[in-house]
Image (cartoon, rainbow, N blue to C red; front, side, top):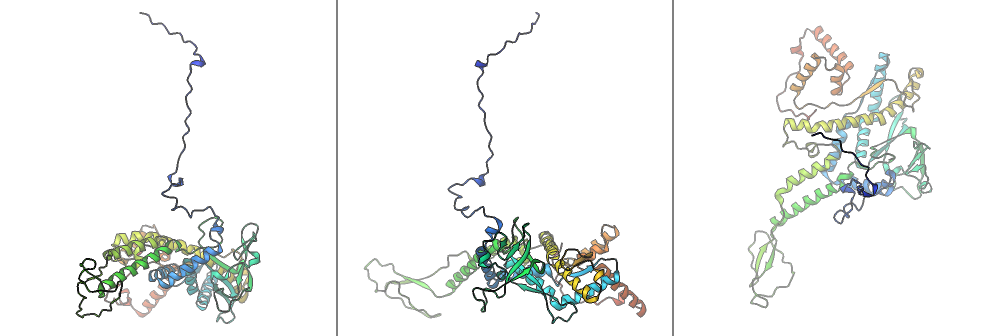
Length: 481
């Protein structure tokens, strides 16, 4: 049989059936408003960064955050620990210019000036203010009483004093005390001469307009276009309140169980044979005494129906949630590492120490470099070397330099020393990096080591004889990365 090709005939368009077009639409469950989630998302808004952090909102958050830090032991400890871990004993300057002699002189004089103006204490105060107030302000001023040729000083002011007069509240280039140019850059700050919460403040108060080049303003910018900060512990404010309420509830339950308190009741029917007792009357009781009840009445002690056994677990969970908004592990926030082992301690601290390093870099760029530029200008004028330092005091043109901060001690110094020795032998690290991890200047440390070896040779001592004695006893070390 021979197969023949089938001839194709044209198909009439009238016989084609229309195929319905289906449109695929994606859907986000979180964008759907239902009866169940309506109240949960009721406070969600589309305000801008500055509108959301308005004057009234920031004032309320500041007052509540200060109240918690002042009255809650955990809140105070968390804020203090954050400031101490970030600033430590204070930053140390290392100049990296070509002239070594000038570098050492500048480092020495800046350290002496920093001690005179209490720079480390002021930086810690500014870090605490960022946590509980949301922002910190410092004004570069002249202080003639300083025992140093450079009379520059930092005057810290609270966020309440930086605000706009009422006549400028509706100005498009004014954001609550900050005067902006056409590009949105701060050009001046409006500062009240007196604190609005002080005893000498009167309305209307006097304002001082300070150029932005003389003001150090540090805050965490969470949104684009944000010009004022809110407290960093804002997400945890209600949690601090819950922690105190739960503590008081547990304490009240324990006191109710310890006190001789009870309810008088009777099993007799209504109008039965029982002595008359005034309803809701109070009977004063004494401890360790035998009591007699009215005829037909019994006494039942109040039982604390409260799960006091979950108190420790509740505190652990809520403190863990509180500390999360600050990138702080639980054992640092609680001051308790009893449930940690070596591995979990190091793992939890990696995020925390990374956050500390980021914060230190932020403070160095936003505050310390500004202070150094102004200090170098005055020092150059005072020393008569104005041409040797390429800065006018207010620009960001600075000689090469870097800042050193306190290092984080290791939980096991022997293991860390062995790992450090291995890295140096494998050439995977440098002395500068290893010393920097400890917050030390490698050049200064090597010079000091050379002087020590020279003195040992002069005195005829070897390394073992010159080593400090080992003291017996238990040592504690901070967990490190």
